[in-house]
Image (cartoon, rainbow, N blue to C red; front, top):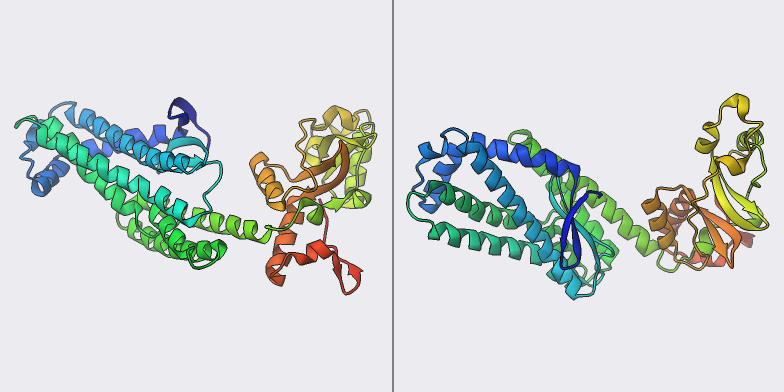
Length: 394
């Protein structure tokens, strides 16, 4: 998740996603709009004795709404630092912390595999939130009688941070409680199976949360949607990683002798003709055995039809080439394709093109491994005495 960097702490960059700039004033407005009812709730819950009339004068509701909303997101930021600092203690790298529409997100370079690490990393955030709530309550108690603004802001933050901690501990994977559940399940079963179970439970909670949100809050509907999508995606990623544990790029790639390539001197007109005949939409561009670029149908379309005979592939191909080695794990190829938003990767060994691995290759391999229950078919490459192959359209 990209965002504007606003600073760093403990060598962790802190970013603001554009959606945060949208949600902060909305939260401030909603708090200011209901400030009288919220103050009454604090009086009933904490015995605050806030004079609600004094909070509703002039611009005060909106100023206090902004302060309360800013304080709430500061608590969210500290919550994410709780996760991040414990993760760093275990040796994990944190790319950044991002504040966005639904709160905060610590971006891990690599998710913890050890269930003990995941357990303590997951509970660290809610523990910090409870601590922030306790500090806010202490500041609330220290406010002099009649300082209604301070009583409101710190009382509000005391309650909301504890609510945040409790809500995050619901077993709705990939929220903190869901990750704790996955960690506990992973003690006695494979991680992929634990993830699938936690994800299914998370989807149920997401469905219930969405139903509740229909009658209460659009925010809860958005959160339910996020939980459902994130749980599905991480479950799939974990399954793919488990399936590709002993599979290399060489096992899955299209080898050089079966690969269709073009030279830099090929005209765009000729390239499009080959795409039609060979049913391919992307080719490695090779010169003297070395990959020098990639050319896709989208690249070719940028040239007007009347000029395609005059343009060569070298003039329109992408030279920013991302490659991978044949002995790399297939999961590395999958992650690289996702991160760089490309459809295929040239496989290079000693500077020479030895194959191509595509998103289709990886997904087909994953489906076959899931069906067979074992990746050995890719290591053997033989079934019934014949070479094993699958559809290699690029």
